[in-house]
Length: 446
Image 1 (cartoon, one colour):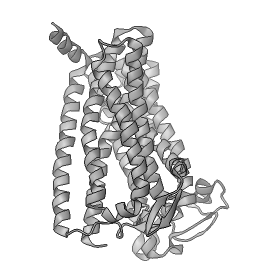
Image 2 (image 1 turned 90 degrees about the vertical axis):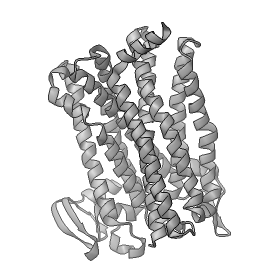
Image 3 (image 1 turned 60 degrees about the vertical axis):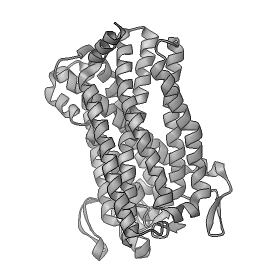
Image 4 (image 1 turned 90 degrees about the horizontal axis):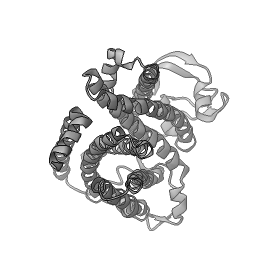
């Protein structure tokens, strides 16, 4: 792989990674905000109105900065990946166009109405605007993942004049690979939102400030976190089976499985040695477990990496370790969520200062887990840009190495500024709390 290809991959990986800092938090936070406003409309309790505005403000900051990162990312299809765009433009452009014209316009328009409509709309109409923002964010993810799903499992196309041309839009939209990914990704976004809310709430509870409001947030966020982490585990299992059927080489890399066979066991402790096409360490092997997890039967046949030409194998080490670490972080998140829910229901969470400190510093965990998950999905697809159709090396633009070096440097600087600004504003307003925000609004009104 030449320098231009590798640097272009690094640039796009950085761009997507930075962009995905914003996306899951937006999806998770807006759902929680809409739930809070629903409680306000149903009960009339002003506490829920204050919380709606508080969490909604944090969502708005994150959403607006995230929009900029997404726009910059799409330009790279023309700058760094022109050959990919030429090959895939007929298919890839359709879901992205629908995402912009339908989903993004819906969420951005309704967000404007939601922000400025507090004193201009009835409670129910304002609530409807909030739920339409929720719908827009979820629809946006549908179209983005539909595009990515084609790259993972190409369907609904024909090859003509050395291009993939769309012949069945609905087959692309309802690609089963995409929908397994979508549901798993949405639960991951809910995890990010839930743990962010728990982290901010724990910060205030440890300082005995905004206690009633933060208790109300924790009461819902703990349930939210348990559902999200359990959902991740369940959908992750079925997503793994989907990978086994449609991308067996990726599955082999995830498991560091070199030899094909039936009744394939799973060692709990593994250290892969890709250079020698073996595992340096294999301990505590459970018979038939890999076959059962992949295909639902301990006697199922599982393809090993040695049955695939070396040039068509994904990098084993990053795929394997990303998968293992993703699962490990997910288990830790589930334990924290269950423990927090248990003590919240018992009414003893305020007394568990150590647990509150863990919750306060837990907000990076879902980010780490989701990033590792996308590394498994994207690195595990290599060397293909579109699985089985076009390789990464054939997708890159014919540009000079110096140009890519410059663009990588600019991307790092630009996105570091945006992420830094996002973190600064979120921390500032999260620490201030909902009561401080109410006081500022009252002062402006006076």
